[in-house]
Length: 346
Ligand code: AMP
Image 1: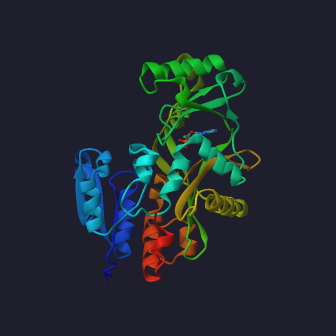
Image 2: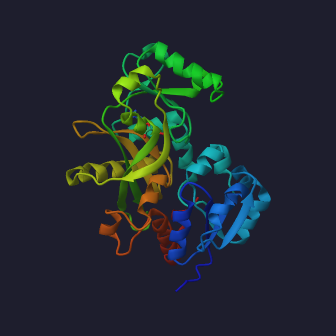
Image 3: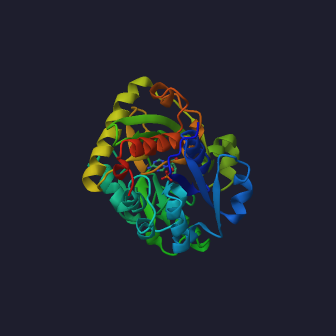
């Protein structure tokens, strides 16, 4: 039965929108997709999308006419990675439509120094930040700012290696200045992405799933025999093409919950109202099974697309297959019923 919740769940047509809108529909909401005209042929196939607003580019959601339309429809906007890569933090904060979660913490995801501060305050172990190319004396990963999905990252073990990688990005017009790059210690181990949901309504932190990414071309390099690797110049890239499911050794869960709790506590202190909704701690498990967090996402991550029917962990917490998208809709529904929407929207 479709309950008339008098709200429409909307999001940008990209990243994890199918999961978000399917989950909203399953919880009884009407749904709305804002997408670029060129992408519509994908979304036109799904009958759980009730309304569509077509735009030339995602930035067009800044147009007052579009925001007015969203408000007329009583929309609640679900942010994801495409919003962060399409708009600046100022623009996101000025969106005049109710946003699920804390739109102000998205600035802390996009800005490297704020990000580092929140991770330190959350007592997470983090890789060493290398201040300048002169200080590189071990394997480092060099990153671009923003949610670029690992595109353009390169490895360097010394100043010369940094300059080579940097010049390539300058020549390819990916960056215009060396200072756009951020150098971090390369943590040796296996990368793992931990998906959490924090409910201010129940007060609980839910560990919803875990994934690893399938990145081109770093994950393809092991398919090339070493004698051939040595003959061709390969500079690995970290462009995400998909995600692979994972479960953790059960003994690791205690620390996982601890990290999630610390992160929720620190975000409430530093960026009120904190982190209502989904977030992801992204790091490397070292050979000692220590989790070193290199990033966080302060919103739903695309890795949760793996679990549209519920992850192993979500299935322990919820009766029906609960995706992260559906969990968001459930929280909004609880917020409406318990008159606590103000605690989960900004
Ligand atoms: P990101 O876009 O920052 O999530 O990183 C993209 C990919 O780069 C990750 O999936 C990891 O494979 C790798 N990576 C990022 N930071 C580090 C690090 N400090 N040490 C090792 N690998 C990293």
